[in-house]
Image (cartoon, rainbow over all chains, first blue to last red; front, side, top):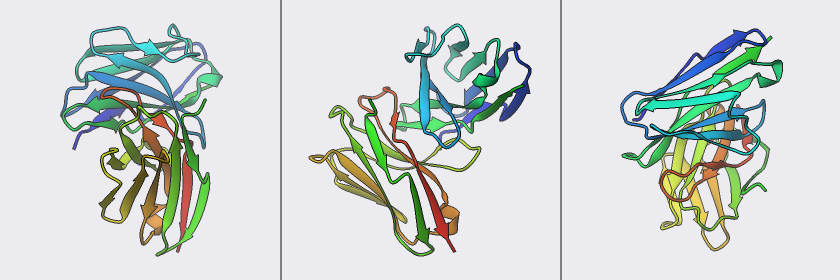
Length: 115
Length: 112
């Protein structure tokens, strides 16, 4: 089945630094990728939707200058958390739409801790 | 406004029992209803999904029941096992390529 590889799985960074999270679709072309944020014991909250070759669409309340999303190819999307602060600590998950399978495949998630 | 409401928030079931999780949606444009299983520290994994043209879909021990008129759908886990202990999310989307709207999640614990 479709696989989305997400890296890193865990990252600890200092306040003020930037962190990049990568998601790759391994065996299909992902024209659309979604980025979610999940707090402990809560549901997934959509942050943004990215389409290959175009600017990402951010959900209300998500700072586009803080959470930079790049979807330059059909198999790679990246989320960069810029000038990270402790309140950015969370579980970030990507998801790709596999149009051939008519379904959504999720990455394994990235646990970000900002100290 | 939450468009997909999920209940219960938590559920404890004995091994071998049936786990039932319910979801209700509001947007009649939704036409894809998946269920996901998530273990701690992992991303959600698709369990089973249904479209409105059928009222039930079964895959192994997992069954989705769908009631279009009531705008409700549910997940039944038959012969629940301790390994099924996880958080389950229902979701919905409309039109190919649209985002998934998630329910609030149900933490299932299956006691041996």
